[in-house]
Image (cartoon, rainbow, N blue to C red; front, side, top):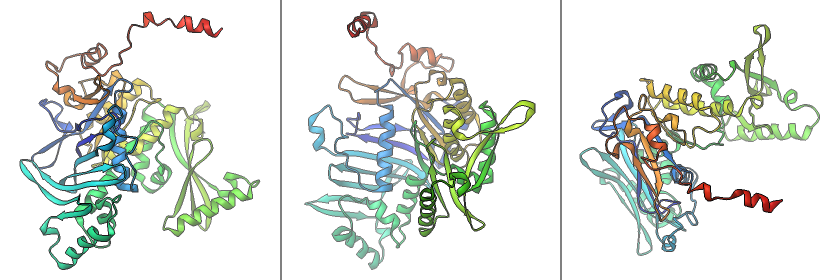
Length: 455
């Protein structure tokens, strides 16, 4: 579970800027409070509001940048540092995340220069006690130095291993976390942290299409039932869903042997690295899964069923569904993960293509469910979600830029006199909490003059 995330000198974040899931003073909606480790209370939800360009999506991009660097390897921050101060290109960009996983809380972070990782650290954290080092990697006199907790290198073999990392193995662009996590020699703290960052810190952007939905549906009966109930409950017009199976030739047709051969080849490549299936999107944006079943190559896809004339169920394809329905399908795995386990789901612009009434119902259902186990964080402009009936005041955040173009993040609980019965939507739209666009006086914008000039 996410505790806090801090970033500096990246996109619109100039100085260290923190977003956190720590509880504030409100003592209502206590089923929104988790205590994953003793003495640490965390919130189940957070909504980040802000005007266009205020930096709320930059917060999500910063999280993704950190996650991708650990998961996929080096990416330079060059050109992504805070741009409104020239000297910032020469300074390090800092990323730090604190979270709880597998019964322990950790603080992990790094400093990045344009061509190297200049510093990296991992600590165990505990409420009311000093942080305990796991490792601290830094550069001194042009050489990599690694300090490790004595309890974790108590044999000559382990000591030699870290000496080799310092002298030869670890590159300036490698994270020590990744190297330790994939090493054949076990280093459990790094492996646990790596698992959380790569598996349980999940981010969705407005147009991202998470792959694997078809496979999840056929391999997990509980998930299939959850997905079916969700799509049927939220007034999408869908009465049921099923998984259709067709032979490769029936699905793609017999007219393009080269395409069929390519599909067979891609499936063979997937099998050669231990995967039993191959996923791709069709031209219409529909996900299909290609797998061998009973000795033949088949295509599996989702078929929504709508109730038609005479109460008959009529099959549709995903490409025939509305953008809003397809967006809901994309969100289903994220909500399932946050309901069933301790995943932290980050959704940028959650309202994208979803009707405000449906979105309110979806978010409030998650908020009021006392059995959830994970966290949901989303950015939005949708004022209808500013509702203290189902969210606490410490679960609302506001992003705003100062006169120098630097983003700040402020929780609603930091504002004075925010009563439980306050109309947050009205206060927000009136600018009480900032984070709304400043349009100037549009009465003086003579757009008819420009239109006349074009004629």
